[in-house]
Image (cartoon, rainbow, N blue to C red):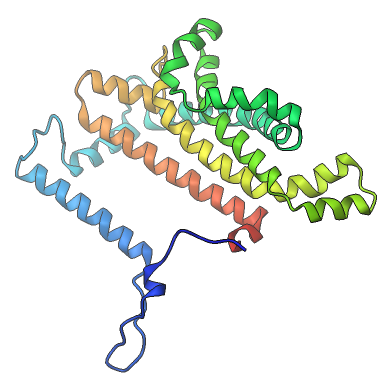
Length: 279
């Protein structure tokens, strides 16, 4: 039996009845979220209209929209928005592939073997709390200032999430299922590939979603190193010249792309493991 700590008070408290005696429908979450965004943009517009904050530090929403349009059409620091975004996505997905290739086998080793847990657990626990800027200079010394150092820094920030989620998924596999497979004559490899891994897929996908978020947060730091394109590089360059509308436009683009990737990841999860959403 599983218990959820996410309690919807609207389901606990009795709903108010309308005059006709019918229970009122709760307001959809999407409408509440849209109203919150609208209020934030309205407050931002008012602050800009009444000059409560200098436009140098807080440009109006209209200026940010114009900045995004100019980024798409004209570009900034010798590249358009599509070119900056393409460079950043190349680094993010390159790092994701590397971290999946290393993280899933490492997570399986931690979850299935005492020796694997003894070897890899200290490394993961050492790496997990480290901020990317702490090991960035060492990565530059080891790997250089090319694309490899950027992908390595992003991959290191993604790796703990995938390893820990995979090991948690492997450990949560029902012993009854494993024993049933063994009693039917399944080998160790068959138990791993046909019982353990399919059961761990929801946890692995959750780890990949968390890793994507960690990768985006590390992107700006990774693109500090001798980059000539990328959203993080664009934001850093705009900040040096106090082009605040470009800075905010870059932040908005990162947020929108991260939300889109999260949506795609959830759709893939629903398609591959539809039973996970009903747990």
